[in-house]
Length: 360
Image (cartoon, rainbow, N blue to C red; front, side, top):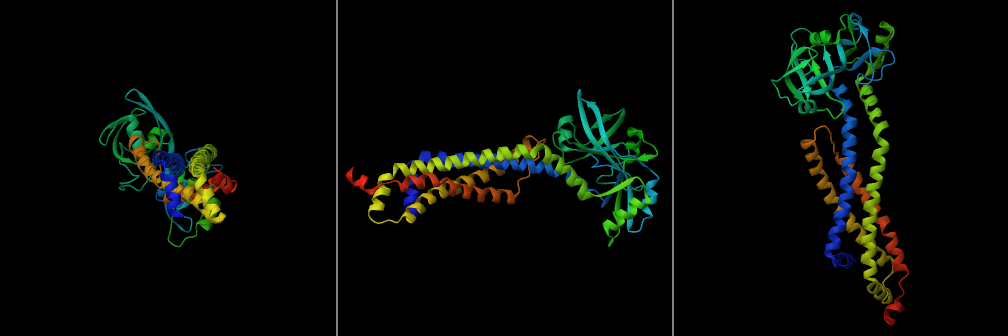
């Protein structure tokens, strides 16, 4: 069975190679689209990386990026006295538009009001700014360069990952943020760090009782809210493109298998005449489809790894996250598609009449 299936495919090596390339192209299309979708959805995971467990906001707030929230700055002292709370950080957050090098830039700026003397990740000193790589590329700046933000000179001290073409982030010092945002006496959010062993739900309820007019979200809820907004805008497009990829791959496999079967119709007729069972012949055809599907998928997955790496390096605005689970799922679906694509060639074998072969 194996030599016959392989021989049928290798009878036209150029066509066999093009068939593998066609399936590989379909797999690359699917995985790149899925990896871009994963990258966009994961942008909101920034909220989970910040040093806190709960976010206190004004009522009817979905997440810091899509909503505006204002709280009295004094609320952080009230929140600090709630049982289960270890630390409370006022958070300032808003979009800032400014010009640099003749171009206009838009960044989502955040500042966490750490205790005096705390510096490092998410805690630049006054006069410093931490920006993401996409914004750095757009502005053409490097570490040590200065940005004039709303009349204030800020030195770039760190460049982090995570931005994309419409969501760039920057971290400021809290004093700079208060001056730039013009909200003395107010803050946008409270980031609450819980004590070990504290129950998030119970503490969230206690915070809402202590601070009327507020609501509490976990970092995961904010991240999920952001991801859901991305899903609402992109999921339908992703579904269409992935479906097109599977249709293209299935059509290539079906056409290759069908052609290889039709060209060997006489041989299949002879095999039927000498007693080969229908099941044996069906396995030959299915094997042909699986060979094309397997080789094309493997080549496509390898090419997708190279393509996503190239995209990350060449166009950092497009974040790609290629997960092995997605690659494995595409591989399995490609094999299932290969089996389904063998249906037409199998029907062709059923219509072969051995007598016709010998009369010829």
